[in-house]
Each structure stands twice: as C-alpha cells, then as structure tokens.
Image (cartoon, rainbow, N blue to C red; front, side, top):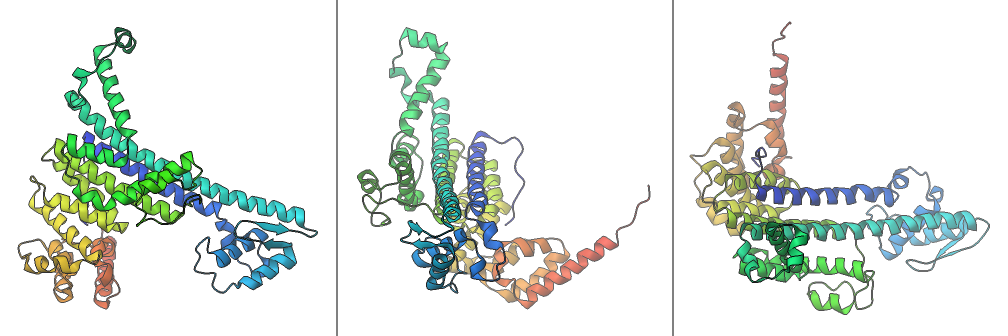
Length: 442
C-alpha cells in the first residue's frame, strides 16, 4: 500500500531496475496475450449445442486433455473419453493413437487432414512462443547482470585490472583513443564474465563487489534450472542431456530423464519470470546500496514497485524489498512505517504470521496516523478496532473508499457486512459531493 509517484530524473540504479522490470512485465504480458490465439480460444468460447457440433480440431484437443492431461481445463470433466473417441471416429474418421499421433481415414480425409495440420501448427507455434519467451527471459537477466558489472568497472576501472592488460599499437589505433581502449578492455571483461555460469556471477558479486547476497540462496536452484533449460532449447532441441542433469539439482527438479524432451508450459513461464524478477531486483538493490549507502530514490523505488508486487500476489518479493527498506539509514518515519506494515502483511500472506505475531502485538501505533492504525489492526486481525477507526479515517480523508477497495491488506474483510456498509456509505457520500458542486457559467 501507500504507493508514491515515480521520481523525476531517475538515477542510473533506478533506471537499471526499472528497465529490467518493464522488460519482464512486457514479456509476461506478451506470452499471456498471444497464447489465447494459439490455443484456439475463439473456438473454445463459441456456444455449441452439442459436442457433435464441435470442429474436429477442438474435439482432438479435448480428447488429448481428457486422455493424457496435456492441457489443463477444469471444465472438461463432463466430456467422456469414450464419447469423444466415438464422435471423432464415426464423424471425422480420426483415431488418436497416442498423445501425438493420429490415424485418418474415410471420405473426409483431405478436409480432416488440413484441420489437423492447422491444429498441430498452432500448438507448434505455442511451443515456439514459450521457447522464445524463455530465451528472452534469460537474455534480459544477462543484460541486467552485464549492465551492473559494466557500470561498476566504468566507475572503478582498476577493478578490471586494466593496468596489467596489453593491447598492440595497431589495436589501439583501430579503437581510436586510449579512452576507447579502456572501454574495450572493460567490455571484454564483462563479456567473459557473462559467458560463465550463474553461480560464478554470484561469486563475482560477493568477492569483487562485496555484495551481501545470502538472501538469494533459496532461489539459486530455480535460476540455474531456468538457465539450463534455456540452453537445452537453444543447443539441443530441448532434449535432456548430461550437461543439463549435471548442473541442476536433481532432488528438486526431476521432470525429464536423459534423452527425453522437456516441455515448457505457461505456468512454467510465469513462475520463471517471477523467479528471475525476484532475484534480479534483489541483486540490483544490493548493488545500488553498495554504490549509494543512503538514497531517498531507492526508498521511493521500493514503495512504487511494492504495490505492483502485492497486487500480483508476489509476496516473497514484497517481503524482501520492504525488509530492505527497513534497514535504510536515511528513511523517514512515514516510509519506515509503510515498509513495516507491508513487510508484516507479506509475512501474513506467506503463512508466517506466527513469526511476526509477538513483534506485531508489542508494537505501539497510537502515535501513527489513522491510515496506519487501520492497516495495523487489519493485519493483527483486530476487527473491532479496525472498524471503529475507519469512519474517522474516511471523515478526515486519511483513508479513502478507493483505498478500502484496492489495498490488499483488506482482502479478507471485503465480504464482511460492516466493510460493505462502510464502502456503500462512502460511495453515497462521494456522489453527494459531486452533485453539490457549483456550476460555473462562463
């Protein structure tokens, strides 16, 4: 809650992270927006009086879902496998041999074959979409890592050990100047590092930049698997090889055996984007803090983005970034209270209320404004105090009806009759204010 406006004139660290987040948001939106077209969403939404009226490609897709569970659809329980097989066989001359092979016969063979080819092409396009999304995701992550390393080396060239590197006169002449030569050597270092493994990047950050990255350790296995799966699809058609198996944690990931082809689902894409976003933001914030011990813009960045993460139910990332703000040396009282409230809420949403309950109950919010008191009691579960204070908060514009409707802290109270009554009264008051506005004649 309590989001703020983006600062004018973003500093480079804000820009690094903002661009990274925009790229990932755009990537996730693209995959989710294109998918419905490729999985025949338009046909799915058409109203068919009977199953028999469905086109052959939709019948095949439904049969695959019911028989092999290739695609998830909770609305398919009433469609029997035997009934679908019978319709396909008798009406269209199609027999599903296994999850990917068909037998086609009869007088409509040509028309049916074209429909099935279109269907298979659409699903192949879906695979291409997911593969491309995975590849782009890793590229955006590498871009962030490379940008951070290069920024550090440009600021502190000696960290690249440039003095001990050698260029020939001819190489310097081609580069045009000693400044360009220095940039060239730095870029070589960055490229060399990016070509290494993920854990080498983390070791570089810890050793050369002294970044504190212990909090990302729980995510490392996931990130390694994402990068290794991307490598499989780029270099080995997605077929599991020994390189993949030797790099991932097989106790955590056991989806594919040696020689099997891995799949990429929309769920995998969404979860991978969330993981890369989480770890990228934490690395970026740690680097920012290393370069700027105190930063009001960093506090604003966290407050701005935190609301987006909460609305997306990304509670682990929300917890981590607001915990980051709690240790900001230059943070003012209001921003620190925002961080505390949202950190507590994250822990509650993650099912870890018991870990904060003692701290929460011992906290004194009597000197805080009503908006904070209301949120405090909402997290604590003290509905009597929360509903007692809300009317005053609304009366003195310390909280608005829109806040009650939008803020995630009130999610579990929105069906409460007292909450609904407050919202209804607030809306009526807002309408009255609008109708009482003076009309100004010009």
